[in-house]
Each structure stands twice: as C-alpha cells, then as structure tokens.
Amino acid sequence: MALGSLLPELAPGGSGRVPLVQRVARWAREKPDAPSWTFVEYSADPSGTRTTLTWAETDRRARAMATRLRRAAEPGDRAALLLPQTLDYMMTMLGAMYAHVVAVPLFSPDLPGYADRLIGAYTDAEPAVIVTSRGALPHVERFLAGHDVPRPKEIVIAEDVDASLADAWADEPIDFDDLAYLQYTSGSTRRPAGVEITHGNVTANASQLWAGWAPERPDPELVSWLPLFHDMGLIATMALPLVNGDHAIYTEPMAFIMNPMRWMRLIAERPNKNVYTAAPNFAYEYVVAHATPQKLDGLDLSGLVTCLNGAEPIRPATLAAFADKLAPAGLRAGAQAPGYGLAEATVFVSAAAEDAPPKVITVDREALTRGRAVQVAEDAANANPLVSCGRPVGQIVAIVDPETRREQPDGDVGEIWVHGPNTAPGYWRNSERSQDTFGGRLAEPGDLPEGPWMRSGDYGIAHEGELYVTGRIKDLIIVDGRNHYPQDVELTAEEAHPAVRADHVAAFAVPGGETELLVVVAERNRRVPLARLDLAEVENAVRGAVNLEHEMSVHEFLLIEPGGVSRTSSGKIARAATRQRYLAGELATTEARLATRAAARG
Image (cartoon, rainbow, N blue to C red; front, side):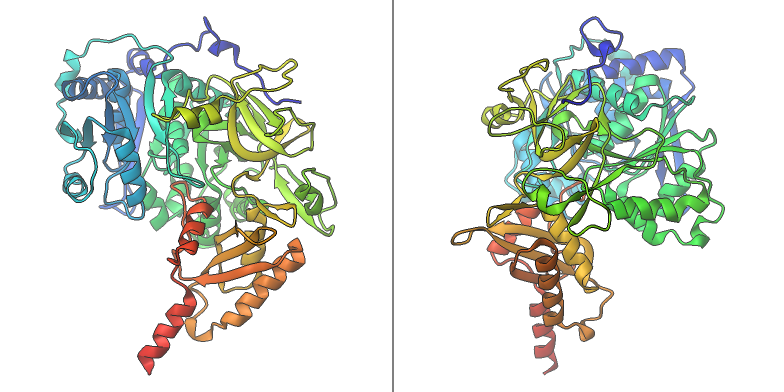
C-alpha cells in the first residue's frame, strides 16, 4: 500500500499555486514591520550579534538584487553564490528568484574540505555571474585563477548592491515550471549533480513540510545553523518563512561546530515558545556530548515544538540519548521528529512529527538481508532496530521492486519511489541520468499514478502506514548472496573497540573471486593515545564483532588517521569516495603513522 496523498491546494487552480518568492511582496504589504530573518554572528561577541530584517526591508533588498543581477545576466543564466552564510546570502537567493536568474547556492572558496565539490558544481553550472562578499572576494579570485573553471561575465559584491535599485525593478510573471535554482547533490555515491528545482517544486515542498510539521501554534519561528548550500538548510531557512510570513533565526555552521550549545540557546531564548528546527543525526549526538548539567542550567527548551532529524541514517541510540540528556531543560518527549528526504524531492518527503516519542521497531537482521522485515523482541538474537520516518505529506511514496517495477506489500524491502509536485524535473544537462532517476513507471499501477516516479536509490519498507529507510541501494554489500546494510556493519565496528572513532567508519564491498569482499575503514579515536594503541587488538575486536553480529568475514580492516573517511556536504559517510581512495592507496593509515614515529625516534 502506498503512503501519503497530494495536497489539493497545490493542484491547478488551488490556493497554494502562488510561486513562493512572490509571497515576499505580500508579507511586505501585510506585515511590513514584522521580522523576516535574523542572522546571528558570533565572531565579535561570544553571545552573538543579531541583525534582523523586516519583511519590507527584505522585499526591497531582494528587488535591488534582482535589478543588479539582470544588469549582469540574462534570464536563464546561472548566478553562483560564493559568499559566506549571512543575510546577503538569503537576499541573493530571493533576488535571483525574482530575476529569473538561476541561483546556484554554493559557498565561499575558503570553506575547508569542499574544494572538489565546489570545482565540480561550479564547472557544471557554468555561471554567468558570481555573487560574493568583500571579505570572500580574494578567495574567489584565487579560485578562478588557480583552477580550470569557466570565467564569469561579472563578479557582484553583495554588500555593494544599492537598495535604491529596488525602485527600478518591474515584476515579471513567474511560472511554476520556471527553473528557480540548481541544488547540487552531496555526492554520497557519485559525482555531485545539479538537481533542477523549479518554482513549483520549492513552493510545494515548503507547503508540504509545514503541513508535515503541523505548526498549529501561533507565530512559529525557525532556528537553524544548517548550511544554506545544502537542501535541508535552504528549504528550512529560506522557504519555510515564506509560506506564512514567519520569522527565521539562523547562524552559520561553524558557529555550531565551535559551540553546539549555541543552537540550544537560540531555541531557548525565543519568547513565543513555538520553535521549529532541523539537523542531521550527528548534530544531536554532538549536542549530547557537550550538554553538561552546567551548560543546561537555565535553559528552557519547552517551547521546542519539533526538531526534525534527517539527512543521514537516524540512530535509535541518538534519539534516546538526546531525549534523556535534554529532558531536564524541558525538552518534550514528542519533540523529536525523524524524517526522510533528498534533493531530488527538493528535500522533504516524510516526517514523524505527531507530538509522540519516535517510533522504533525491531526486526530480524537475517530476515532483513533476505528482503523482509520480521518483527522480533528487542533482546532477540539478530535484533535490528529501524526508526520510523513517519508519513509523507502532499506526495505519494511507494515501495517498489526496482527490477519488476511492482509495488511491494507492507514489510517487504524495495526502492523508495516518490510522486508529487516537489519532485524535480531532472538533472542539469544530464538527460540520461534524469530519465533513469525521474522517469520511473509502475508496471501495475492500480489506483496509483503510472508515472512519472522519482526513484530515490534508497531501500525501505512501509509498515502500518509509515516509512522506514533501510539503506542506500548502491551501498548495499552482497556477500555470499546475502544483503548487508553498511550502516549496520559500521555501528558494529565502532562499538567493537574504544580506539574506533564513533560515526567515522565506512564499510563497503570490493570485487572478489566468487563473491564480494567486505572492507571496513575506521578512523582512530583521538582519545586513545598512540602510545597505548595495539593495532592487532583493535583489528581482532572489529573482525570478531562483525563475524559474530553479521556472520561474514572482514576481508580487510584499516585503522586510519582522524579526518580520513570521506563525508558528504550533509555529513553522511561517503562510502563510494572512501572506497575509491582505499583502492588507490590514498588513505593515511595509523600503522604508517606509528612507523614514522618509530623511525623518527630511532
């Protein structure tokens, strides 16, 4: 049975068929002095410096940017955002959407760890104009000079755009099918590609997300630190406030990394106590690690209505630890909302936001490897927990056998297919891949649409009307004819020995003679001193645990130095990239580090 249904207000002639960016002008008329976005800067003041725009100011600055962009580019040209996460970033996105210039939300070239992603996305988009800041301009110039990338016609400095240019802007019709921006995927299994997000897609997904979060309380506010170049950060921070003219407070990701309790304090200080937020699973683990009783003292999180957990595998242990650690600060048991989404669906597909504790079912791991979810007791042998990602809203999800293209019954594993107004039309300049991903057709649709369906590349099950994600199809490890999900192997490996760094393990398969072979690459935990590290002990512990839990042998185990496991822009383990570096012999092993230390000593 398929999950979800479409929203009538998004159907042709429905009340929600107004392009989202056009609502900026509406809120500027109806509530000109109400706050739209607040940016919090921590570089000068540890407590944060807050700068707030009203809706009237937002509309004026967005129109000024639209005028400036159209002086540098034609409708349909791309504008690359190579600037820090500030209010200027948001105004550039809105201005590009006004101007029919296709935004490419990226980042300043000095952001560490993303050089290859920036080169690939920028080159693929071929932007006619770059928008940056005065502070980031030298980095942009070095980026252009140091790489074989297209040269823009012009570089626009965001702070220098005169607000009076707004008076020169004349509104132009915006169609739901018009391209709004290119959302480059995070590249967990292959090279990043530009997902074509239309004005209809972003309008629909923002409405779907609000409907899924059910903001029934008055004047909801969003608090975020997520990067705006990532799909979840962009939709949550930019699109959600536009639906009903609400207020969003955001900072930049490094502010969170430097001090995760800033996120909690921003939530606690909101006076109206109706706050929404979102983050990947690792962020909640990070807060748990830093939320001492002293740091929680005085924090009131009772106003946190929903905190969405998505963008990477959701761990039941994380949900439990976050609930327990923050309960003394007033966190409600039903505030946590596990969800599922991907850039090809704009971002949001489903969420369990029903003011109830997250639902976790326990299934038999052995049966799951054969494609069937069989529930067992929590303490049963081979017990494998799965977290519910709730129900889709405003779209339809089907679990489909990717070979036969037939819908699977409840409890049977299949590929997650999505149909709705939020699914993108395709990938930028890649018709073959677009057809493969967005052109799914059901062989026996019955009451469902025959197509087109977006094929997610993720395995999952439907159970009692809710969606459970089991893993990436391309990451699946098949040993001796049995399917193994890498995240399960990774969790086993990291729990096997304290020298393995939590959430920094990549498990993948390499070709073998008669079957695939399992490789486990794990980062060293810095808290275990090198002088006390016994490599053989660590390897034996991991091999033994994987053999016991999953009944398969580890072909090779590598303990590598911290930072060696590749990750995507959303923080997920990039197994394909790590596998490629493993095969190329590019991983810096701890064994080599120890050998170098020994040679230096003597």
